[in-house]
Image (cartoon, rainbow, N blue to C red; front, side, top):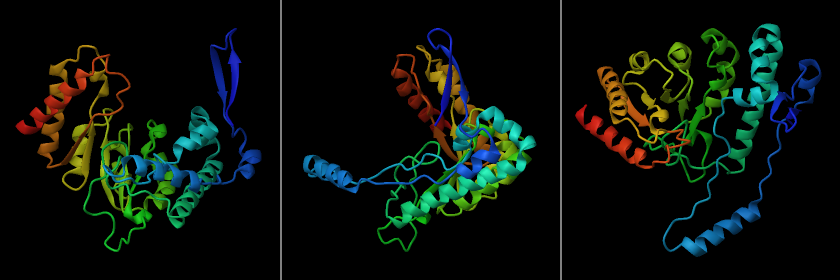
Length: 300
């Protein structure tokens, strides 16, 4: 439970009190979440959808049990971001133990979903931090209609540690993500955090195929690092579409620079426009951005 301490006459400001205040007293209280599934309601909704759309569409049961399996998001929700940054130096042993608990809890969840046939086929749906999971390499050749983790795309990131030294990331984060990622057939890694400084560690992830190249990454360096061996999953800047009057020249320049550096390194290119929380009340921005992107792709 999150605790909020209010301030001001109308509670206009507050501080957040993290649930996990003291490692010594709070770690022993932690336990894995219990998963329950309402199978009857799920089946009723599916039957209803089939009765309405069945002659036009194929109805499938799909669900997202997670977005990220990166561990550091639930960690900072338990501990607090500022406190977490201090834990590297003040409570390193306890932080390792907390990461072990989070890792084992996520693995237990994955086991439950796999054993109970609750995993979706995600080869044709949103995966990772943007884009779709279209591939001929999944599911596995021995797939018999029951989705297993090795038939799916896995995904981890650690945006919360964006300012953390690569070596600390390699000691306190990646080793706990690895057992999770090892369970999947193919893997995506990264979101908004720049990965160029961490690449020597990230490249050790098994079955890694798609790597995020965010607006905060050194795109040229990442193009050199990924080359033709991974998908250079370039996230273009969504702020450009947030203006009422989008600047086509700026959009074109960003796209052209990305395409040229990727081509120079023979990258497998994926261009993503995401995180569009506003379009400046002008949806035409999306249409114009896509048109410009297509034009630059054709030129390159």
